[in-house]
Image 1 (tube, one colour):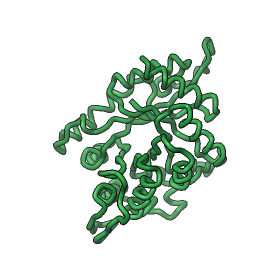
Image 2 (cartoon, rainbow, N blue to C red):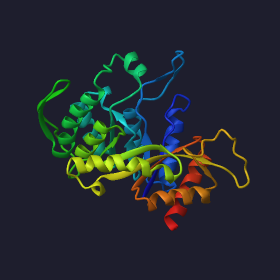
Image 3 (cartoon, rainbow, N blue to C red):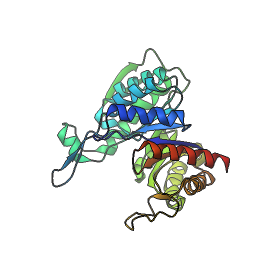
Image 4 (tube, rainbow, N blue to C red):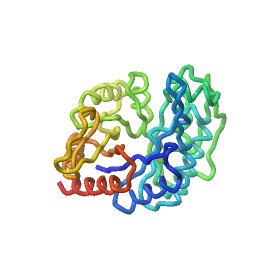
Length: 295
């Protein structure tokens, strides 16, 4: 089981800090670094929080690192033309020497769509057409598609990918139609955001049923899980507002045991979201990952 970490790419982190955490994750033995794809966050009262642009940061970290996989959790297909996005993915996968995990999603936060002038209607329909363009382009290098929302007529990606089949496609989904699209087009499925492993089992049955519906073996769809992790010191009292059902809370050894629980449950890749972006917590996660591997 691979263990990675989400990078802190909100407005409170400078690029230098983001880069430092990505390089640290690689140096300390984690398997992957992950990037969220949003344009802004806006509350109902108008309060707005910022975030750096996902693809630009990931391109920079592809050069700053040499080994860790680079994943998006998840890239919103509505933000970019799907054919151009596929070309971007093939280019970055080549630059990184085959380290890209192409996580895709339909989007959900309407304020960022409105603020940047993007259509928010028929998200699932638009996502389905995007997959019909992106999947063959990154896997085979060409597609000929005309849809209601997108078209890619006689489209080819030249130069092509450096690895057969292109970067793996990951989809984060939970609703029936989106799960069916996952089963048809994705290499991996993501469940998030969870805490202890007990929260995983209820999520598995719907995606297994979706695979069966399209004639696919559920075990052929890779299982990835996004988990929340909060480190504590031995004997430290955690505030009562900590949601123990959605956050793994504990020492390095306790977190290692929790990670191992996901391995036993069949997870192939964990994406850890840390409570803080401090260097020490990245170090503790790497220690927990190593101890998990030794169990």
